[in-house]
Amino acid sequence: MDNKHKLGPTVLLLLAVMISLFSVPDISALEDTPVILGAHRGSSVEFIENTVEAFEEALNNDKYQFIELDIQYTKDKQIVVYHDITLFRLQNNKQKISELTYEELTEISDYKIPLYSEIIEMIGAKKAVNVEIKSQGNFDDDKKIVEWIIEDAMERNIQDSMIISSISADVVKYAKMKYPNIKVGKIYFISFMTYVHSDYLTKELFEDTQELGADYLMLYGANLLNLEKLMELKPDNIKLAFWYFNDEMYLVSDNS
Image 1 (spheres, rainbow, N blue to C red):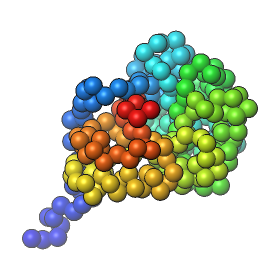
Image 2: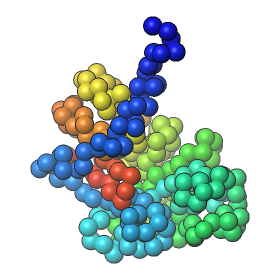
Image 3: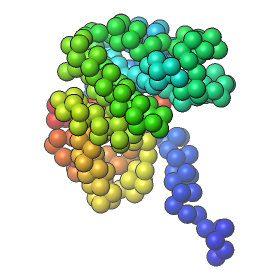
Image 4: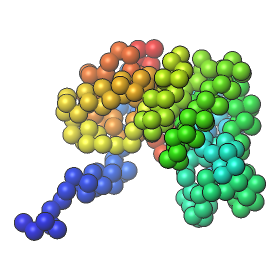
């Protein structure tokens, strides 16, 4: 067969991603396993994600037991609560957060993008919080933002009710190394393990998570397709979490 007609691993994974967006098991797949619901990016169905209004609703709604939010630096090193690297998905603007000062960001945004200090002051000790650090590819900046967030949490005395998470392995590893008593989570979207339910791939994912020092393995809901292996092979010191592209994030409390 001609090489150009072969489906390589990357193409197959891209196809799997497309399929996963339309065939994701909901959290009921866990059946009788206790879960704790968090507000993913705040109450992000009722309101624009990661906004003051979304977090106010999450705080006031008893169904949410914790709140998840995303943070990153602006050009002038202000920590803002925003998920994407650019404004494109939510505001049809291709400019990057890292290339704008907070004043510039405020001027061009269609709505208020809050500072982290404003949101954490609002949440305080009222509910637990999962702070996802969005790496912009500069590890020195990543380290500084980890240090600022955790030391701020210590000053507020909320460090015991906080999880620091990231898709960046370097961020997770550094946070745990620098602050071993802080809970950290490694985030994954999908991988071959999501669809190829082998002991080897599932064990490898857990081993990678343990090597980073992570306390939580945070998986997109499509990974519930591999639930049997995940529950069978999960080490006792790792907790699972599942997130969706809506307002739902669940911590599995089987070994809490």
